[in-house]
Image 1: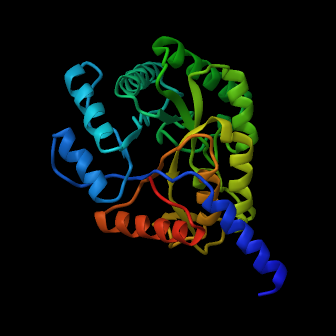
Image 2: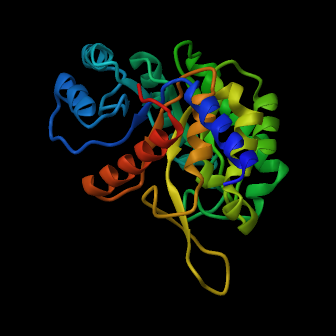
Image 3: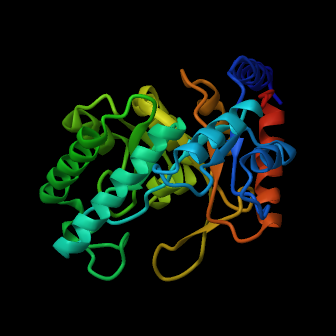
Length: 300
């Protein structure tokens, strides 16, 4: 290693080590309805962030118990996911989905979660997150602005945020489109849920994921409240095919991801998702912790 490279590496490590501790979380496989047992299981696994246990906002006693139990273990509730199509082409289904999103945002507010995430949706009539010609249109953008405002204005969150994720084939499909959406929605209750893998939709972004990650955090960092942890492999075919895999089995630059995460003004949780087994989640967790250790980063 040249002297210049050594100095650069040392400076990067020093900068990383000065960052805030990272909150890592993921699904757990304990069969229990007891919030105290669930919170302790997160801590046993080394997690300091969690997906919200099953509850409804009307279950006020249970909601209070969840909040109290997880706070006692210093485990934050990262998100109350909505995950329905807010732009379903069927008007009845769209209305039902928007009602459900509001229910989930109300629960996020009640339990003190960092956010309630969804995607903007899709005009695809059969796959709720699928591709469609109009998913990159002004009509799609305007409808998403209206949906986000409606959900936020109905619930008026103070403790949580409503967020949507980038998608590779619908708006917002990158940090610039997300900035435009933030400005158009124009609500304090709107924020960013960062899933960098969802924005990697080209070979350039795949091979230069660190640059893409840095761009996302540079432009959107002031609004990021929670993140997802995934990885991507390129499957050789006659067209581009990226496959979600366990963190560490793909090409996403987790050094860049964790470094940027540690520099945020808030301790935005990093949540593992979309894996199949407890063993896969453990593998992904260990890889992320290994990368963080090399950077001198701690975990909350």
